[in-house]
Length: 477
Image 1 (cartoon, helix red, strand yellow):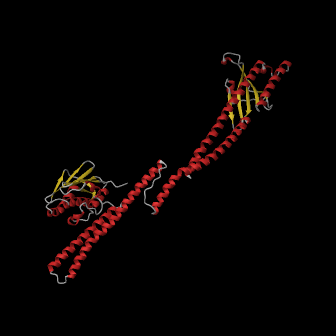
Image 2 (cartoon, rainbow, N blue to C red):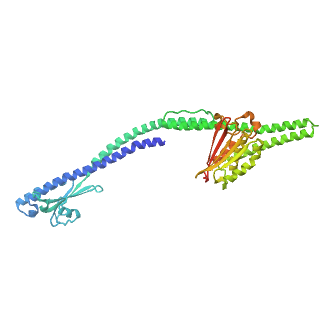
Image 3 (cartoon, one colour):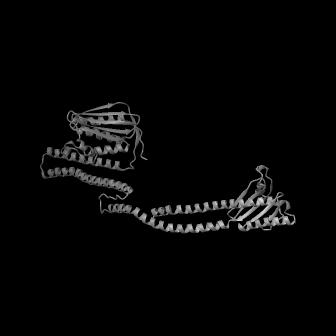
């Protein structure tokens, strides 16, 4: 409907404006032409008045003067009748000596227009509201060459009707209205057809989107009718692909969570059943089995803890507890806690601080970032390996680098390492330990700080993670 209305207005408004412009232009031109025509005739009459010495003998009763006066009066009457107007002759004393209506003879006529005319200026005034044109023409001897030396004997004040102009304008208006109505009918039909044609591809898009929304289809759609629909469809298809990826990820996540939570429970049940089956088992065996059960419970607890951490970070409204802390001190404290784990694998941890760094961060989430990256560097390292942690900063960000001399990550696996429960070496995942959630937790925490995390890795040489986080925290707008 909006497209239809826009097309209709786009067709009708120019016609209405054009009709108005034509009528106004005609009125201006007709009035100007009427003024010019009547002014020329008044000047001719002015010459007759001067040549016949109308002002000198207008009261004379001599036969010659009477005849001359009657001829001029007849010309004035004819002009008055021709233009349905009124002509008054005013002498130098501002008295009306002739009025074709016979109403104002002998009266004094003083007005701004009459005074200007005695000064040698023609005046004209169009009054469309009352329907007349008023003009003044000086009565002077135009045979003199110098205008300034001309003698003005009087003024002709003329009012003529504009009825003929209005009648012509009315005819023009009726004809243009008729044409306009026909144009409106044609434009209405064209707008109706074109609005339907224009909206049809969008109806296709809407139908396809509704089918996807209702669950009848999840295939990509194609509506190549217009460039606009192509852009919309491309954006929708990209969204649909993203939804499929998220849906697959969710399915995998649920399957992985189920598997990861079920595995420790299965181990605990097998150990418990074995103890029950061996009623007279020695105390050493009981202790060994109970230690295994405790280990599996700890593993289960670790998985649940990491899952809860991920759920909290997935909440976009999660509040950040931002404090200004020393990143150097925090890193040293975390590495102190992790060195006993590294010593068990005979891995050396080296900390290189290039400058003192104070930044606005969430201390808990920053701890998760450093802990998970260094723990992974220890787990996937070689015996007698090295983990190097480096801190640096510029005027905007601080940079944390965690480099290991471990087994490395294949290049094709790098895009997947932040997925939940994803492990590059699945065959040794049980031996290495962990939940497969560490890098996902670290990446989410980095993003919540408005930072970035990058990785470089070479097989059998090692891996380097680079985290860049702003020194001053800026909340999302």
